[in-house]
Length: 464
Image (tube, rainbow, N blue to C red; front, side, top):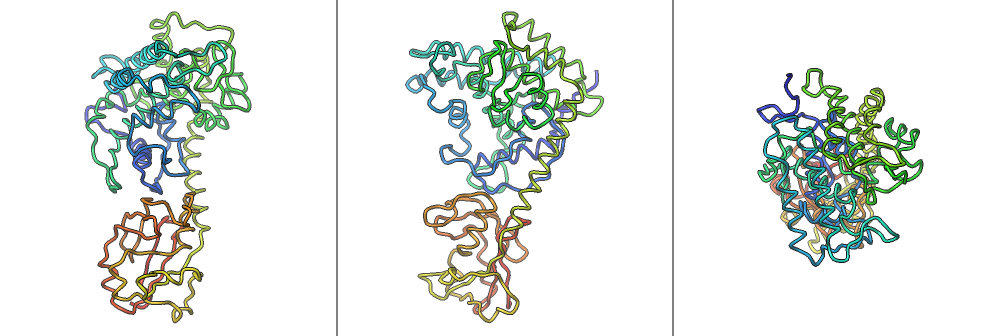
């Protein structure tokens, strides 16, 4: 049997997975703006499809806590206004988390996909049953909104978002306290044996991202996806949003289709061949014989019937979409205006001239104010126009005082040397090497600009 191309003994991870997991690891750690990455087309798993399509246009929302996998996953798995019976049942909630974080079996004696799939599908059923047993809980039946974790849709999202965190932390590492480099995260080691098997969290963002691609168009044409809304047609024949999806068969068929997209990018000679999807489907029928189809579509059969060209075309489109998205971001940043920094000798107002900032001109050097020794020891404040340009390029909302939110990550170039810094709440940039300013001495003019290509604040000496 040929070797698996994703789980060799050395624990090597494909460079494409390294890149995409690092982007997410930085984002959940509050690092913003995200680093520019060169995305490649390879897809390791169904989860990697989600990582490749995911392109956040804004920092981690304030309602989330940095690197808090439990709290953040619970929030996104609970739709707005959904009742949460676990709010006062801490022990029951902890039992669910412990069962998830125990992870799948320590080793995969057979194909990693088959072992992981059975573990995850049974875990979804167990969590759903536990939630339905909570006092005051109610499921999909009736007119009430299902309470927390009483549907397959909510259970899968809780597990798969949690898994997404751990996959990213195991592959790329965890970023802490604004650190520029990731640290290994041993608690996620259980991830390794199943790296090609992981499922994607199904939600409206993913569904809408797939809609314009070949797979999404195929779904709409074949009545699997609503034409205008992010609703999948399940085995009952009803179109449902992810949170009300309560059909294990529909859920698994969705994952098998994403898995086929990933497999279209795998090298020839990998242990997993085309018939693996049929093996997965057979395993589902054997483990879940009670999961029969109704008046609606059979998503597992649909995954088997999906034309090879649709899966291959979607893989190509996903790769192009990721690259094109990066180019569009650079194009928008390129339009940000270049602005001039003015320093002041008045320590009570370091940037007193920022109201009159204008584009730099080679002929305007005599009008520049200078950096004095007494100012060198203070935090560097580039000025309101640069803050505005930086915020606009990175789609960040300025606070009520017109400043970039406190703690936002920013790259600062002092001459040829770069520093990973952060904004404070008053318009200053912190965490750079102050020696650079010290070497300029007194009376030296400097220019400051927002560099569109590097998404960074650039400071250069003018008269030194």
